Image (cartoon, rainbow, N blue to C red; front, top):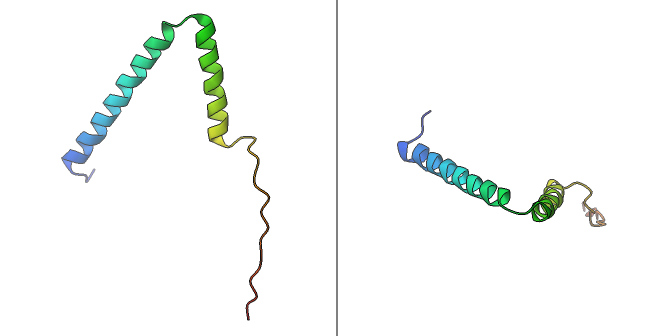
Amino acid sequence: MDAAAFVIDNFTDQIAAYDSIAKTMRADLAGLPDDERAEIEAASAVLRQVRSGGDRKLLPLTIVQKDPS
């Protein structure tokens, strides 16, 4: 790669930070009672669906052509 060392170091540090946060969240989830964990998993599934754009209603838009003259 032709990237400066500080750029690579920055990305490496960001990856390590996200990995640490993911490990903490997994540990916290594992410590929850089954019913609470199931509610969080259901909410996460809804968020993933909304973020993916699935079953999203679009606004009714009309295209107006400008007069070329």
